[in-house]
Image 1: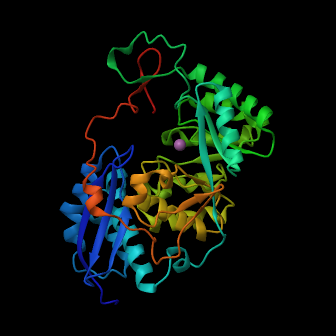
Image 2: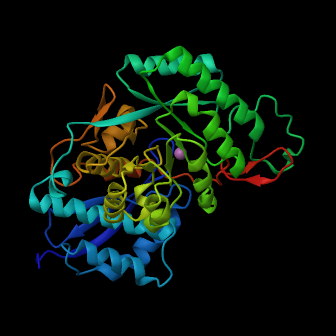
Length: 402
Ligand code: CO
């Protein structure tokens, strides 16, 4: 027993930059002691807020803050039906906050509490896009000059540039794209970038599940000569069995799992060595507790980590990513979307990890090492409009994976 208990839990929703962010604050029986966690499910933040405030607040009130493993399992099974991004994000907000509290109680940064650091800084990749392959190359070179060794490349948004698309069936709205155009442009882009930027730079590309499975196999094969660091989310989670075929055809490394909401979804992919990087959104998985188990499971099979790190992760979530990255031996790479270059985010979240010359560094403060200015957060309300970019369609108007 630590004799310190959960006094109250509340949710802070804010949109200081491009995405709705959800941060959870767990307050304890010690007046000055609290923890923060990321529960950001940017497109359904009200549902996550309800799970925390209407159910977990009462479930957890008065319980010992020390028992993270037990409380995680209690939250996981309390609704009987479990998993999914709403429940897991709610759990993550509390789970990360409890780890933050434990770190503060121990007077140690999270990476120290987990067993110490395995490295001096966390290597990150930046994202370079552009309307043309020449523009993408310019951005790649700019990152190289800034010291980045890893860059993700792409023409246009996910699925490429809709320049030849005449949208014959656009009455339903949303985002239209052509899989064949995307396929061809991507092979052309990687050929161009590898030729022009040389062999030193580590290149990454995100398919975002925009191809039919057999075309995914063909793309992984077609890109093999360009020696990618990894190819990201080649297929949707429902089509994981196809990775056996991808593996038998090509050694292009694969980073998989951005949409996974249960670390056990990785079971056969990891055991059969069908992928090279576990790439998930830690809050959608349920927080630091399951992410730690997943990284250990991956380590056993020679597979590395590549946690999701876009702008729909709150700075508290980024801090959790970086703390784990510092510790885990089989760390691979970290996606970085530069929250540290955004003035309002920096002011709202004191202690934000910082990127310098291709590496991100955390401070040495206890726990996650990050705080929130709640008054400032309240000045930036969330956006309730219906999400457009996920309404993806192919040429004949059929709904497709975003
Ligand atoms: Co992705």
